[in-house]
Image: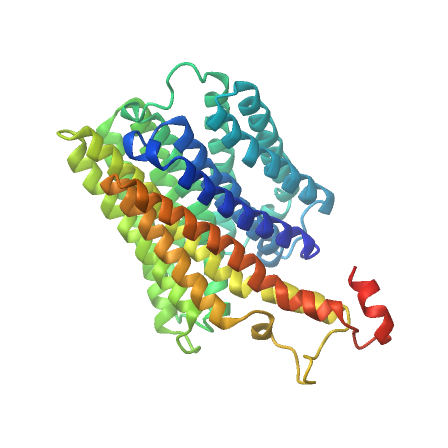
Amino acid sequence: MVPPPSVPLGFLAAAALGLVGCGIALICFRSYAVVDPTDDRVVAAAHLAMLATLSMGVLGAIHQFTPVITQRPLRSVRLSRATLLSWLAGAWLLPLGFATKQESIVQAGGAFAGLAVTLLVVNIVSALKVRGKGAPVTGLRFAVGGFVVTACFGVVYVIDRQGKWFDLSGHVVLAHAVVGLFAWLGLTYVSVAEKLWPMFLLAHVPGRHRSSWIAVWAIPAGVLLLSPGLLLGLSWLAWCGVAIVLTGLGAHLCSLVLHVRHRRRKADLHLLFVVTAAAWLVIGVALALAAQLTMGHHHHLGTALVAASVAATSGWLLVALVGHAHKVVPFILWSALRGRGIKDKADGTQLMFADLFDHRWSAIVYALVTTGVGAVCLGFAASIAIAIAIGGALFIATGVSVAVNLSLTTWRLTSGPTDEQPAGEGATTAS
């Protein structure tokens, strides 16, 4: 049912590259971020985070796990590869256009991103038509819809970039960010996590599990009210949306608590990644509420807290993405290696998932990404440029470390002979 390993791994490798690009942008544009978080150059860095990193990783997860959850294949592997290439072009051209103020590049990036969204919908819609597969499939349906709405917002920005659409006081960007963060990225993670947690934590929650259903329905329903409320300046509508979104996020956290409580696997680094990610979600919500209370009498501080809230909420998704990558990537690579006849390590013992990466480096990666998110949040909230630069440097180190750690062992194994090959043919086959 699942596509070839090169499809999800291609998306995840591009996400690591996007994190490096985001870190470079934060270092380069740190001084603009503390003066005006809505400056075009800061928007460029944000898009590298949202499009080239988080969305790229989430797209990889969708291509890998939708067939697993629905037991139906995607329409075409070629469409999957075309989606990767189109999204990769759009995710880099849009930030480049924002940073250089070249509208033609922005328009080209928007065209590629729109094409990628269209290809994804065509490729995945048949698999998501299946019924009776529970809350994860329902959540993925809503998430793909949120992806389309996010793209439509982007089209509006591309059409009229001279009308000061990026003025945060008008709440237009925030309305866009809410849809992208919660109805697309967040909802996808919430949906896929309901399948990943039982598998990776060895957890079985007894009885009827209502919290997952509440999460996948409440989050998009709340965004449906919150985003128009922000866009039109209707505070009562926005607050109704906030209450419903918080209900959905609370249900997601309750589901996590249930899975952690009923897990049969001992506490490990993966659990630490998951719990830390959830903590960043709570911090992001707290910063958003603080921004609302501050905005009226101290506009700059309120704006800074909004930026910090977006950074913390993005940190929820980033830490979760990095943590789950340490489970998902070895799982995919292990299956691919066995398919090529590589079943044992160099010492002759059986090859396991955990043998495909260095666990000490994984702990270092946890420290890098967690500290990086904290530094960026502090830099935005307190308007400290050097903190943003430090966070950017840590993101660069995270992207490089994850890519090397999750690929180096596999590269070494495929560079030598396999069980089904003479010693002299290993390098040729690996190439």
